[in-house]
Length: 128
Image (tube, rainbow, N blue to C red; front, side, top):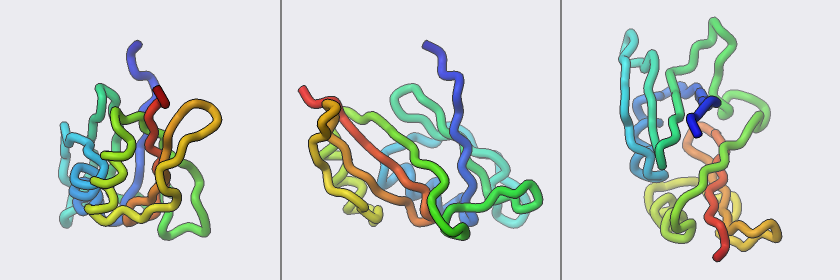
């Protein structure tokens, strides 16, 4: 199936976010369009054939990172091959862990973490 929904995230330090997301969470950077003054106008990351987009916060359009807001407005769920190995990688790279890996009653093993600017991520693998 062709991907039809593309999450688009705002970061105040998008270059640092790209580095973190590739190092900690294993995304592959596939596109980067630089903006003015070291900002990112548009970037794309992929994992497992699925695309995620991000850019520097664009306050004139009302886009701000969660770290500047009074809460989390959304979460991103990503399936990975080995959630425990993914968890160790993220932890070593400095991800803020909310929940350790645990088996869920709906048949998935998951953990939750936030990136340095407050976007909340859930990573999971089906339980065999």
